[in-house]
Length: 157
Image (cartoon, rainbow, N blue to C red; front, side, top):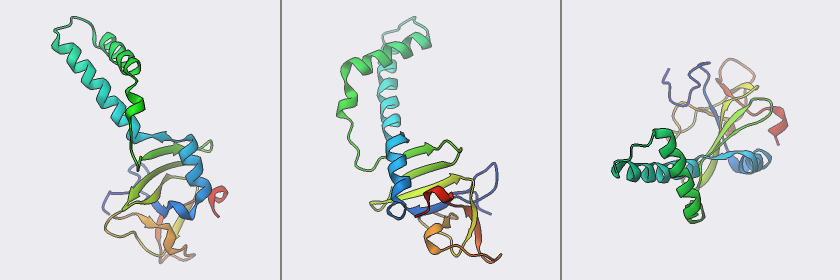
């Protein structure tokens, strides 16, 4: 089996569902998740400041340069200039269920990375999300479906 969109520790496919199909989960991700796009953007800015400091032939330790770069980022208020219409989010709830939210053609998709629910779906996702279980295709009760992580009951609409 291809390992794209598969939890490498468990060997179980990720389940993917349209975000608009599960508004409660999507709201929880936006409210409590980590904006991974912002985190990457912020880290890039901080690394750029650190690189500029190193070019000054600083004898300071890496940890001191990290602190100075972080303080410079905060002082410059660069965070106010961040703009992204389709940020990627990660979220882990109190029960340890793990989700990612991303976009495909402007549509929000939620990946069930590791959840307490393992289900069988009728179909795999299109080539755009290879090998993932399509949670929108429906759940089957027999062995003919594709095993993947699904939505825990508290998120099912």
